Amino acid sequence: MLGSIVRLAAPNAQVYLREPMAVGDRLTLDRFESRELQQEYSAIYRSEEQVNSLFGSVLAQSGFRLSSRSALYPAELCNRKETEQRYQVWERGQ
Image (cartoon, rainbow, N blue to C red; front, side, top):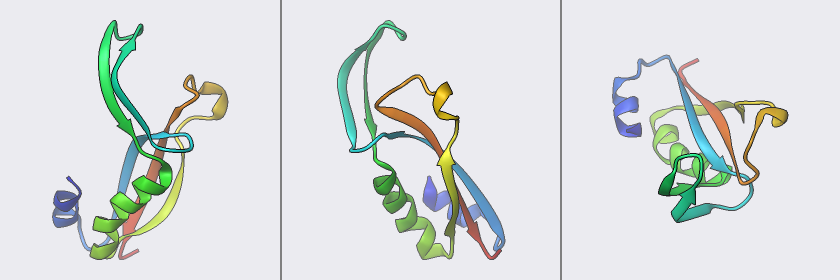
């Protein structure tokens, strides 16, 4: 996906990425039973450092730099202790 973004983005571009991330260390769920979803699911929630490294390994090599990052919602609206929605803005040629 990131490779496609790099190829399709203009020389002057901003890329907004939203990712659910672990609060603290990476969190791996394997066949976790969810009452909300009424089923089991599996997921990997990477730490912010891991996400930065993963995105940066592709984007930084193509001239992008991380210009901002933050939680998507204020703490009082987050209903999970282990994960949170976060966003990052990567810019190239700005």
